[in-house]
Image: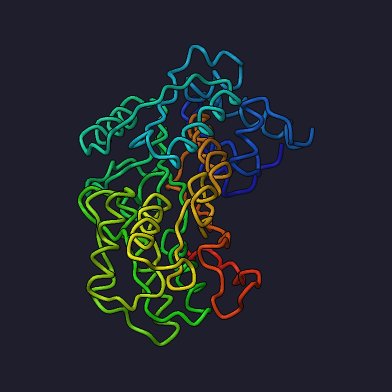
Length: 368
């Protein structure tokens, strides 16, 4: 087996090697080592042989859960904790469902924890994962200022676009880009009095703080500034609070011609408030949301929304998790997925009666 000089100079003591060490000595990627260790298909005989030789030479010993993955005895491993703020949200229900299926496909048991958005519960789950190596997939509600000081080599993966958790593996969406897509779509139609409902607040996800900047960014590209009164924070991301905020907005600024809601539940409340005030959607006011779940498809009118790639996000989370369980070290990794604007009747082009709504090109995710 051939090794380059760099691999020799960084060779660990036998029995202490990580998955990254095996990858370096074998001259392959960490994901290839993970596949071989877990007994998964998709690697050529030559690559598999190099990985096996490196494993034997370094006396590589995977994390116990990683060994369970490779031997098929995952029943002996700790269950994967899948923690979401609430199962009342269709988005988090979908996310939890895909993560449970991902655990089953990997031969792992799983358990679901509803954190109720508790900072203490989230912190306890993370501390247990960091200290004991128990596998955790956490959709956090808060940005905790404390770091785990783990250098990323933990069995925890966060499902959120939160820059504050820079030392942990993360999978998320481009939250700012989602709001940008919606605002850009409405601005392309010539609407110029847009409002944003669902800015950050004490009872909403920390990701809320990332969506509002995207709304402002779209306006700046069009040479516009958003008056302070046209963005509203909510105590909770619910239809009820979305309706109340919209009613207040219309009372203060009757000329609003478009509303970007931070999620689909809020958008449902926006639609209700507009109907109650006698506004026609989309003729008088266009509305968009984020999530593209059943709520969007079944609302009246059907809601334009940014679809989030939940299955792909779940797959990426399990890829990161299983690589850590198999012993992969190194810094934290980030997988970010752009949303896709799905245009429906709630934002049809009022300047083209009877025409199909125009669909602007999808914007790529922000560079990280």
